[in-house]
Length: 75
Image (tube, rainbow, N blue to C red; front, side):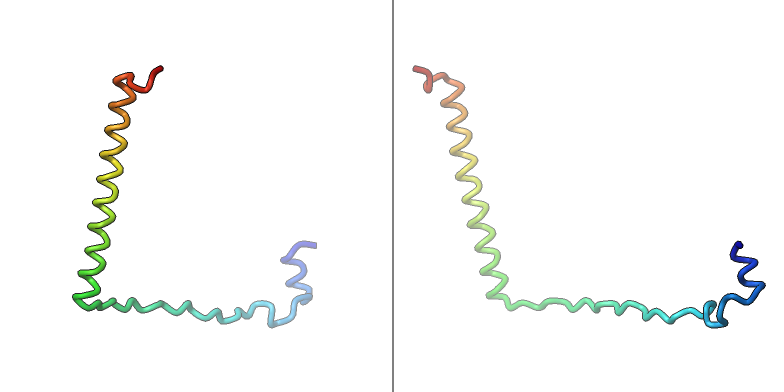
């Protein structure tokens, strides 16, 4: 038997066609963050320190590569 025959023979209850109401998802409201100037300045100082640290490491890597390419590490 196919679905049409089952329907015509009344094998389904009347409730089978009812749809359950699915609640709509609640949209999160975006709340802007407001930070104090001192907090922002502290964060900026941390970023600058990280940048300086990265520059120092890149300088060291560059010098080590030059030293290696010049052949000073060979015995």
